[in-house]
Length: 96
Image 1 (cartoon, helix red, strand yellow):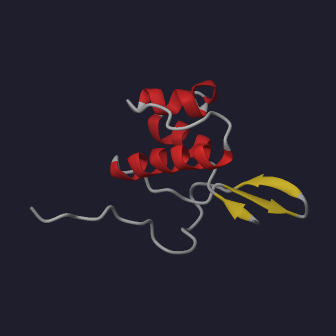
Image 2: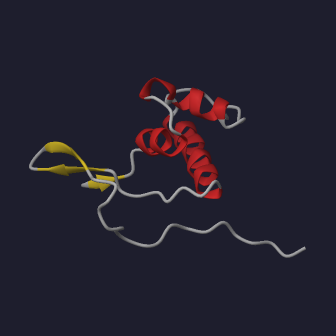
């Protein structure tokens, strides 16, 4: 991967919280969610990160690439940079 979304950065910027409040368990707790699965399990961590991302989208966050690798160096991508790739997924709308 050469570019990605660092969910901790996105969460901190969107909800206006300091970096020390962006640990996975803290983010879930602040969103009123429990950790599902075993801590530090790659699959379970990924599922919980996805739950946070879904909640952020529901709350109106526009998730954007915010980090990338360039010449072996980690670089921050400006939030004013144009959107890349596909538009953010929309939550399915269910008919009642």
